[in-house]
Length: 260
Image (cartoon, rainbow, N blue to C red; front, side, top):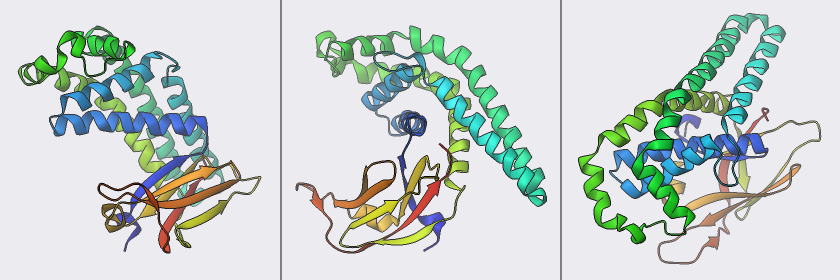
């Protein structure tokens, strides 16, 4: 199987990478919810993105963290360009693209933040979650949500359009991270493996690649441990049954991204 056919599962090892992965996934959920016509999923994902951008609750505004990752990646490309003159033009172009994408995020925020702060449905849902009423029964949200969702489709379409430059920038950086290092072929013996990182390694992201048929069987990679030693195990998520540790050998691919 080609590495391009693998399903990548990313495990961040630094706070900056964790923030990036969480933001990427929340943005993806908004698009998935709209595609699947799922208003509650859309509300939950939109609130998550809003909290990240605005710094609500115990969250700090995520934009400085995300932009710093763009800066670090661009600096890395420039350093590589100095070390590898044959690839200098392509690497410098990639660094320039990152600067443009960071600028597009700043511009998109000028319009998306006011929408997130003022839209009645989003702010109502946000208030309800603070009151531990995420389904919204205190204001009859389940009884009216689907009607509002279908009759006011411009709400989700407008937010999707406002966030699109941010989505494109984040997905572009994500693609660079996922193509940044070679894959290593490994086997988790009896469903378990140990990944050791040297003290000098500045690894910010582990990416576990597994074939689609493994995931469809409910076999999922799980990482735990510390900065220098990561324990990887595969769990079996069977229908209607408790989680079980996989006890058979499981081949997988590993990528260690030296960007933190």
